[in-house]
Length: 277
Image 1 (cartoon, rainbow, N blue to C red):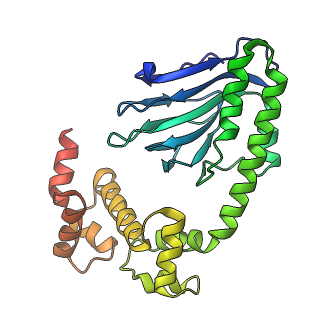
Image 2: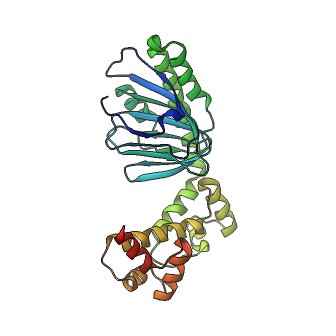
Image 3: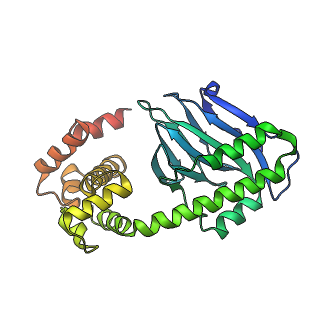
């Protein structure tokens, strides 16, 4: 456990540090409570720890390798070793969160056994007491709490798994719509098509999607389409006309209107600006 993350504003956190002995099976490190700071950010290029976090208030952003998520009050997330961790607070509504960093094979087995080894975000978990149990256990008896802490962590993983399973079952249609949208970014797409892909009416589809992801299916389509356009402008040598055709726009003019509406500048201005910076 030699790696130290890059941390902005470390004074915005309260810590409960475990100073006792650990084993290869379980090595608690530190629990903490992060207070609101618009500049809070942590980056680990190749993490060697597990990170369990719960957002108490506000909003933030989490990235693990190429997977990313926006997180809000009530959400939990899990970051795993061997991955790139980057998480930071929203500047306008900075988060308050409670968390545990730990290592060991026990955690790997627990996450695998409870079906969380591929989970990043557990939306709407809403059970902060499990995280406070971890924090309080270290704070009350730092050097002798390893066994109790392992039990608390097991209880947390059980609760996360139960909620995650229910969430996935309830939101299967929303996930299927999301996949359908993301597979059809290179053509014009209507909400009716996304709804029909899961046999829902458009109004019901919008409700289901918003409940799962906090935005409408059409807004998700526009956002993902815009991000794809950005990537093509940044990382390909295609002309703007060719990108417009690839994305299924009627012509260059319509593509330019769409792009300007999303970011306030034309595709050519965006490409020029990013090349200069």
